[in-house]
Image (cartoon, rainbow, N blue to C red; front, top):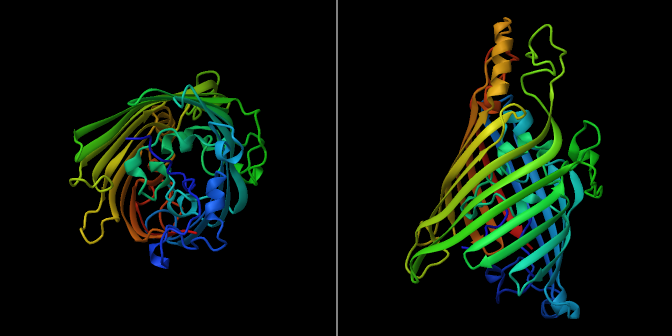
Length: 448
């Protein structure tokens, strides 16, 4: 199995082409209206435009019952330098985002995990801008420019169908890293080395700016509003991943899978979740009131992505599973352990061979240090819950109406939003945790 595609909502680099004789047979809605597909293909040029729109309703729990609409348009441009001007092994890629609407995660649900993978601030922004060169006969490549870590790392192909953003870039990394790390919608300058010593083994290693938006304490998507800051003064974020690809079964009914081991390191300063610089609890009246500063942060992780069953001679259909585990130090992180996984079945119904149904879960543990501070505050007589963990359940159905149109109803259930932060529906209660939340959503995706 090849490395999984990113869940970050940036479409694959595919050229606009007619795709078929009629509207419903095309690979994209507009086909080839200007008759330029043959010319662009011969010159190594690919252009893509995808629009994702969704409506989400918080049906119960959280901070409030509300309806949210989100839209994201993604424009991509790719150039194969061999076709363009004879420079073999080179590829240039750029993408831009147009984002509108409002998210439901923070104000509506109060969750740690991001309810939608396209949730972001209103903006028109540059996302990717990089050049990649292959060498060693195509067994290695080096990419330089502005990019995001969640386009290559920590991915499982079977999780692509889900709407929740935590099935792409993990919730642990999003909560613990400065401004969520180099991930959608904040790409950063970096470099990525990929080496494939054998058909079954791939090694990835990357270096990124450690903080996508290091200025001040404002919303990072607003301080880097157009994706043009190109900052390199936010420390360093390094990540490495070893991938093993394999296939079980027979050629007619093969069952590919990918297993990954990885780790990341960030050189920034992080605040202790429990203690001040003198080792006293932040709840102690004698403490300084300021958290101790901890240098560096790190995490280790493992993923498994495996096809369990598929019909004979039907490589695109079948049942697959994924599982991912991630851990980080307790003292400087709010979330210390994450486990997520699920099942995806493409072609469950014979009459709908290209539809995919998915069932997924996530569990995000609040660190021992953060829980210790909650207990200290409770011991002082403050009536507030002690956080434990947040849970996620998601059921989704992606219906492929045509090759260029997908409609996807979705249901998510958040258990103990925020891990059990104070507050309840209709009142600001400090002693009662937020109620479990139900979110109903529907997304449409059009490839132009």
